[in-house]
Image 1: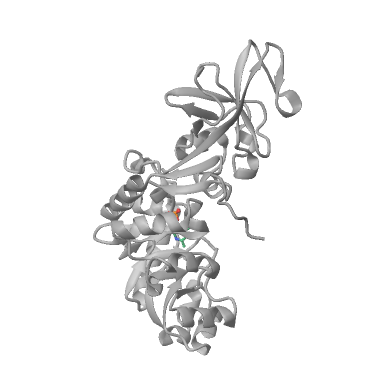
Image 2: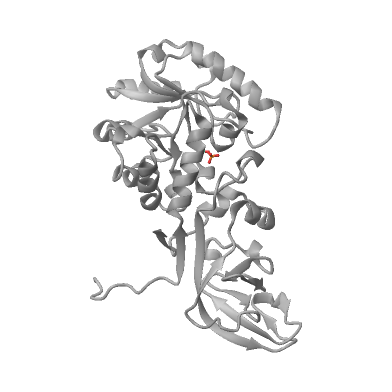
Amino acid sequence: MTPLIALPPSPLRLRIDAAALAHNWAALNALSAPARAGAAVKADGYGLGTAHVVPVLARAGCRDWFVAHWGEAGAVLAHVPAAAIAVLHGPLTDADVAYARATGLRPVLNSLRQIARWIDGGGGVCHVMVDTGINRLGLALADLGDPLLARLDIDVCMSHLASADHDIAQNALQLARFTAVRGTVAARRYSLANSAGIALGPAWHGDLTRPGIALYGGVVRPELAGVVRQVGYPETAVLQVRDVAAGESIGYNATFVAPRAMRVGVVALGYADGYLRCWSNRGLLRWGDVRLPVLGRVSMDLTAVDVSQAPDVGEGDWLTVEYALPQAAAQSGLSQYELLTLLNRRFARAAG
Ligand SMILES: *Cc1c(COP(=O)(O)O)cnc(C)c1O
């Protein structure tokens, strides 16, 4: 049954700072030069919403897009040409091959089996992933002499760094292996660096870089601090304000006991929204400049915050969740990637 009235607004919003997102792409593209930066937009644009991030990035100048699943490509395809979208998981079945050929999406071929499946299905321009040491997806170096490779029309030959966010010998090892790959696999373009790889320096850039997390405000290496700006701002409405007497406890299992009389705001945010229980007695919301610490356990749909210092806060007011990724990761123990991709569909996303 279709309701006859529009759904009222959600008490959860994820505000996307479009100017910061465009700035981040331009900054990463400039750092990548003379290579160009593409954009990893898998997992619904790292949780921010494909429909919100892709148009902003396209206007900023991005021309190459990376998703993981075939099912993610459609939302990107609504905004950019199919041939510009690479599907990282590659064709697992003949149905994937048929889908790629019908839509014009570009598969990333990760194994000799995927290459054979692509050629048998009719083939066409493709990308190839070579594993240089992460031991995740990609052709093994030992596979590169296989005659099947010579039958491909390869746009981007890529590999993926395992530890670019750390200064360890693996980065130079992967670069050396990739340099050898470039001499073996004929392709129009070569691509190695993710966000952190861009900060490693020009030797890692090839022709095309593939930033993801840094576009969305992740600071995965110190060089990116001051370059990358926060993009996602979770906001939640106050459902109720209550007075709690000294000695009363708040939330499940009474993990917080009020040391004094307090004014407590209860907001429409919980672990079902991706605001996990690690924020219990630890997270911070804001009302303008006023800091509102989380009190007690985060529950499924609700969280309590101390609004004693914000006497104006009342039902229906909007509070901002502290969610600068590097700081939030340090505080919560979650990775910057997890923090973003956790935020669920109850958030109304809007770019502005
Ligand atoms: C996710 C992904 C990226 C982007 O990585 P970030 O660390 O988010 O910049 C690039 N390349 C591949 C193959 C990926 O899977």
